[in-house]
Length: 244
Ligand SMILES: Nc1ncnc2c1ncn2[C@@H]1O[C@H](COP(=O)(O)OP(=O)(O)O)[C@@H](O)[C@H]1O
Ligand SMILES: [Mg+2]
Image 1 (spheres, rainbow, N blue to C red):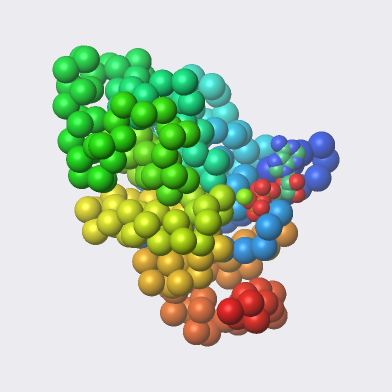
Image 2: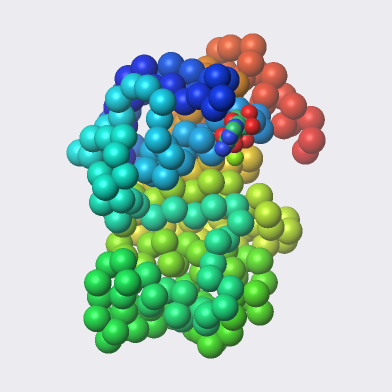
């Protein structure tokens, strides 16, 4: 993933929640965003995935120049898979249909192509036996895995995960993190905000530390976790370590 952001700001009602974000990151397959709650992680992910418009500044993701118009962003989003903390599945239709619906309606697969793609993925991600259930008849971990499968079903160029395990029982967190790690092994490129520092440390190629709307530090997992430079990052990491 390549990110070029220049003087990007996001304001809500006169308050800047992202403050002069500048990034020049080249060819990092997995980028992780860490930082305190309210720091702007979700806002940044929503902007980079084309679901929220920035207030100012320029944004290029891979080859895509994000413009502040709905048509441009709608087309851009077809390249993107996004997974939220709250799975955002369609509750009233089957697990299988949750996948085929988007493939048919948005990505113009035929019924047969959509079914074959969905069946392949449900098998691969061990959800096959649940295909006729409604999403809420599965565990939280299974529902989140379905959300992941749905987001990658149309082979997006890149994926965005916003605290994908935050709503899960600790016992279900690993199965979802393992699934996401598996995506990396399959060559999927993604950006993820997470409070799972072990994951950021071991899976990310590059880490951003975002605090109060400002990128305070960025670098390799080794730079960030072993050699933090700022008081803010040292404080953030030590607060996390205290919990363990
Ligand atoms: N739609 C919105 N309207 C007004 N303020 C918002 C909105 N979305 C987020 N914010 C504010 O932006 C700040 C950053 O939020 P967020 O991006 O959710 O941070 P994080 O994901 O790091 O917890 C917070 O102060 C939050 O209250
Ligand atoms: Mg958030």
